Image (cartoon, rainbow, N blue to C red; front, side):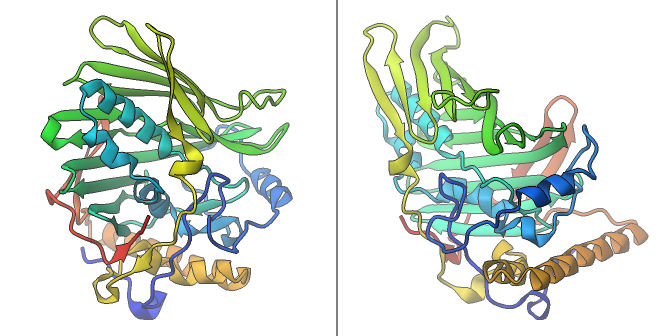
Amino acid sequence: MVFSATESEYGPKPVLTAPLSLEGEESDSSYRAPNIIQRILSLLNTVRPGSDLTRLQLPALFNVPKSQLQCYGESVYCMSSDMLSKCNNEKSSLDRFVSVVAWSISTLRPLAFGVAPYNPILGETHHVSRGSLNVFLEQVSHHPPVTALHATDETENIELLWCHSPVAKFSGSRIETEVHGKRVLKLIDKNETYTMNSPKLVIKFLPVPGVDWLGNVKIQCQENGFEAQLCYRGFTFLPRASMNRSIKGKIFSSSSLETIYEISGHWDRTVSIKDVLNGKTTVIYNASEAISRLKTPIVKDAKAVLPSESTVVWAEVGRNIIQKNWEKASEAKTNIEEWQRKLARERQSADEDWVPKHFTLSYSKENGWHCLPKRKIVTPAPIICTP
């Protein structure tokens, strides 16, 4: 099925916004989320505890001017330092594993409390390059939401493949979003494949509102025999600075289970490893160096931007959110959602299943959703991000 967004519906020019900073706001933009805590609480009064929130349509007032596709992509291509290339350039397999752990931590970007990105529409894409790294995403399913990401760097011989399916549930005092699916990082010339999962994104309302990543992450490489277990911690009944956005874990041998390094720190500040044999401590991740002064991507080739591109599909909505014209933003967002419902009804009437254009999608009870790119290499994008 051909994606049917047109320039007349959504405008020909992409609306690009600054990447999210460690504070959850856009890093080089004057846009700031409105103070809408009371509105959030009133909205959630209509939602029952235990409810699945994946079908909840938020008013534009609750949105940052970007799609969830962009947020996933930004965690890969928006970096002040090239931590991904470092994973491939370390000489020893253990040093490469440590670099992968540090890179995995760097992909966490929180949102400001009270706002969320748009739910991507079916078939939406996002294509951005940073140097020799080319990143492509597609929304391959809408109900349930499934996002596929494929990135390749032919210079560094690196390939990334993610398949994410977030499931958000309201529990009364918080919203917990479990991100199902796995991330795969391949260092091709080293013949090493790293697999990892994601922590949960938790929005807490009481006693102190906040947004944090919580839960356990496992990183594993069968080829070099190393494994890491990370525990992301944060919210406590009595807030403590030492616990806020903290991380603890270890790197160990998969065969002997012998611990090599202990991991500790805060993912929004610094994270260190301690050698259990000699007690030496080394900082492996500094958030202020890795995620600071992030620049807004720019359009290099306007003619090559796809009509399904996130920054085109949501252009009118984003433009009005930035201008704080909430009525027009809501109207534009409603038009997109109604258009999607119309297409869904047409497919149902024709007994036609949606087929992703750029990925092959499959599902099994044992392994969940699996996304396989139809192209081996991601081509350079018409939108670029500079360090």
